Image 1 (cartoon, protein in one colour):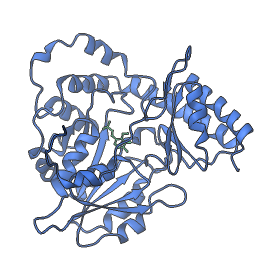
Image 2 (image 1 turned 180 degrees about the horizontal axis):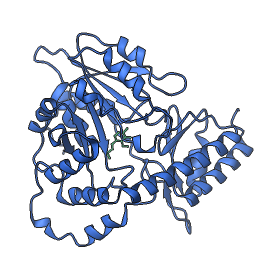
Image 3 (image 1 turned 60 degrees about the vertical axis):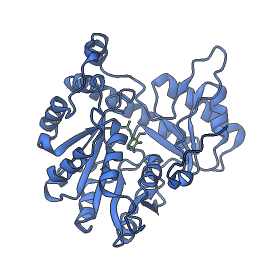
Length: 364
Ligand code: PMP
């Protein structure tokens, strides 16, 4: 007997979020997940210390994340009222979309523009709101085609998502590129700059878009504690923007969305900025070691400013070859995405990739 409960028709149209799925473990082999762009090094020691002693779980969290917002405000040089927190940046993005895009009473759908390929959650979240996705193909190097994105604006466009560095392709936009883009966008279209991976960017000119919020109330920057801070499991992220815009998003929040453990862990991590930076630098160094080695083997990899890289072409056999040695990597239509792991994990991947290139040929 099936439940006969009507859900909104939009659900039958949504792509599903294919979270990195684990292959069967191989006997005697530690399995490593390089499919979700996690930080392989874990959080700074202060986080573990705090979580071990955290007992006030019988209390509700501060619904306004006051302490965290103030700490972030000092860090970022913005007002605490310019910041709203969420359960991961996905939580924040969900609230932003809910605030600005949907389907109107006359049935007309708002339009949300973003690059494609980009983060796979975008079409799902946009679809849930009832809004329409307008996907603008990446340039051949995997970066955003900002001119085409600006040209895709219609009078129904409510929001543009800019992912930099872009998941899953890897390239990032410079501050000047973003500033130039923003200057050309009508002031009633929101521009969301998703900086989930910005801490891993090293390319000259790539830096946060936060300074733009002062001049442009239609710009929101999204950040997360999931990547550089290695707190993906506790779910905390935030958005930075004009206080009126942030206030509107805050007003729609599900109360207590960011839990007390997450708030405490984020604050603890912020205390050890050097420790966080050390881990980030180690991941960047591994990326700079591994990508040239893979390119030398003939693999086609776009520039990565992130903690992952995309191997393009017909390389799907790699996914299976990896699974046989306990490595989980992520296949996409555009190629196979591999998260930068620890040195040992990366070496294991490099060995598989070398063997695969030798035996299968990769058409390079
Ligand atoms: N933005 C991008 C581009 C991502 O790749 C991810 C996670 N993979 C997120 C946002 C969401 O991260 P979280 O919700 O953990 O902050």
